Image (cartoon, rainbow, N blue to C red; front, side, top):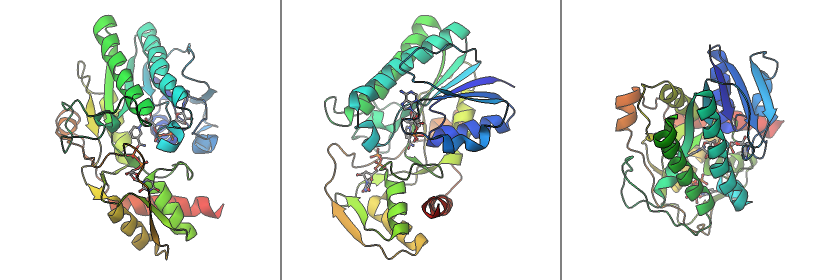
Length: 312
Ligand code: NAD
Ligand code: UDP
C-alpha cells in the first residue's frame, strides 16, 4: 500500500485514476480546486477511509506526506483553458513547481500528465516522442500548449538538478464516462448533441484527424508508467493510434445513438491542429502497454454514461 497524491483527481481522468488506486488498496489524497472537476465524479470514493478529498489550488504550496504524485491538475478542454488563459499558465507552471518541490522534499516519485499538444500542429506524422513539435507561442491555445511544455522543462530540470524521480507521459485525446457534458471537447459535444437531437457541430471541414483513447486504457498506461523501471523518465506517448476524421467521428456517434441530428459546419478555431496520431512503440517496449478498447466499443460505454447524465 502506498500514499498517493492525485492533483486534478476530481476531473475526468483523475476520478478514474483515484478509483483504480483505491481499488488496488492504496491511500489516496485527491487535491482539486473543482474548476472543471466535480465532487460527483468522486462521490463513490468519499466514504472510503483510505480516500481524502482536499479542495486545493496547485498554484499554492501543498504540505502532505506521500510516496507518489500524479500531477493532473489543469483544465484540458480548449473552452475551459481559454476561459482564463493566465490562470491556465499559472496552473501548469506554478503547479509543476509546487508539486516538484513536494516530490523533492518527500523524496517521492512524480508523474506529469503532459499532452500531445506539445507537438502543436505537427509537421511529423504520426508523432514520435523525439519530435519537438510546431507550437505557436502567442496564439489562443498557447496558454495550454506552452504551459505544458514549460512544465515538461521543469520536470527535466528538477530531475537533472535535484535528482527528482520523474515520469512524463504525453496523453493523446482521451474520452469516456465522467467527461463534463459542457466541457466542449469533441466526443462529449457530439454525443450530447446526438442524444438531445441538436445539430452536430463540426468545426472546419471535418477532415482534421484525432486519435481517441478510452479512459480505462489510458489509466492502465499511467499506472504502468508510474511503476516503471528506475531511470525511465519518458516522455512517453499514451494514446490510441487509430486515427479518425471529425466527420467519421460524427457519423459513428449518429449511427451508435440512432439520432436524427443534422451535421452542421462551424468555423475552425485558430491553430486547431490538422492531424494527430501517436507512435506508441516506446510505451509498448517499456511498459508492455497498448490500448485494448476500440473506438466503437468505447463510444458505446460513453454514450451509456451520457444517456444517464441527460436523464438526471
Ligand atoms: P479535467 O478538466 O476533467 O480535469 C482537470 C482537473 O484539474 C479538474 O478536476 C480541475 O478542477 C482541476 N484543476 C484545474 N486547475 C486546477 C488548479 N489550479 N488546482 C487544482 N486543481 C485544478 O480534464 P482531464 O481530461 O481529466 O485532464 C486531466 C489531465 O490530463 C490534465 O492535466 C490534462 O492536461 C491532461 N490531458 C488530458 C487529455 C484528454 O484528452 N483528456 C489529453 C492530454 C492531456
Ligand atoms: N471539434 C468539432 N466540434 C466540436 C468540438 C470540437 O469539430 O463540437 C473539433 C475541434 O475543432 C478539433 C477536434 O474536434 O479539431 C478535437 O477537439 P477537442 O477540443 O476535443 O480536442 P483538441 O483540439 O484539444 O485535440
